[in-house]
Image (cartoon, rainbow, N blue to C red):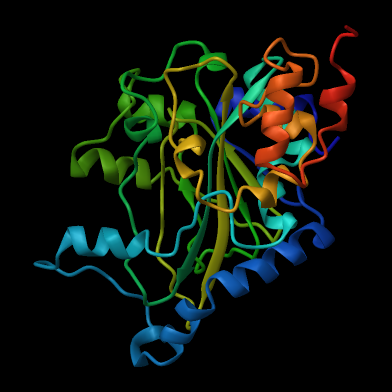
Amino acid sequence: MRFNAQHVEQWHQDGFLIIEDFFAADEVAPVLQDFEVLYKDAGQNLESNPSAGCAKVMQEGDDVAANSALQFKNIDTLPYHGSSAINLISLHPELIALAKALLGVPQVHLYQSHTWAKYTGQADYDQEFHCDFGNHTLTVPSDDAAQRSVDFVFYLTDVTSDQGALRYVTKPDVEEVLGRARLSASTPQQQAALMSRERAVIVPAGGLVAHSIDTMHRGSNLTEPNGRRFSMTVGYKAAGNDQIGFHVWQSAANRPWQNVMDHASPEQLACLGIPLPGDSFWSLRTLKLTQSRWPQWDMTPYFAALPAS
């Protein structure tokens, strides 16, 4: 196990958990290779830009909407045009196990998975402190942690304070600053008070941070000359929790799902909503039809689990 009971307790107490060496070097290396291919054009464009070595900082009168678009420029969504490594790391068995332990539920679903490549000078990545519930649910975070989410961010490159380290404030500190009504910090005074308590996620490649949709955090700028930060954002929720959502996997049927389907285990696929072997959904008809859709998917466990006729 790559986590323990103290990690779970810390997540519930502080709202944040950092594990510096969650992914091993041999797990990170092939995913980093995929990033290099996916974002080679972004890197080349910066190399030809004289201001690439300098941090971009918003000035009064700058177009906020345009800068926001630049912040989120280099993002791709599961499934990825890459190896099985990048397509399955969001569904890593230890990541699934940690999500179950943090939420305290027997089954979880993956509801978010995207890459993110940031480069010094491409955008001003500084953000205000915020919680993520605004675009993960139409209501508010539940009082019950099991009905919230686990949002993982893990890194394929080393992250230092000048390489866009995520900044966060623990739940106890947020409550001291904002009181129980801690879902937003709408005034400059509140933002400044949170900033005085902020901590930075400084981790080597392979490091992981876990937070939730009700925890205060913000993006920060890359100031290292010619710096870059490669990360993945992965969200889990309890299976059956329809209040929380982000990506709709079924709406992306034209993407390279074979990169996932042909390599994932039944337990990993269950996190995408695909019924486990033996589920009542599976009949000889649905199995044959699904096999014809994904001919390279090894469905042997599903066929074997059919009741004898």
